[in-house]
Length: 105
Image (cartoon, rainbow, N blue to C red; front, side, top):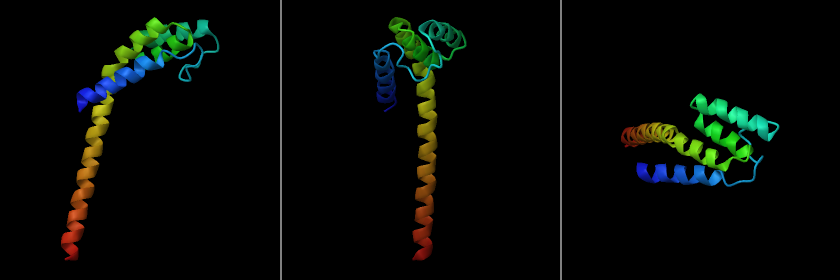
């Protein structure tokens, strides 16, 4: 399941870099030059998802794809944590439901 999730994130991220330049809503740059500068800053800071969005807005799809691929481990970790959290919530709800039925009968 984790491998499928990683693959889905990878394909979605790489696919995003195929949009037209300037179409990246995650980059707050007004021009392609500003987007390129912001992308470099984000990349150096390890904010690869944001860097990819700005490279995409700058029209630099090769660097956008590289940044999106580097963002996969961080995105995968966040997805794994969220999946674990949701599993814990589901267990709690199921336990509460069981207790409710036991106390009702």
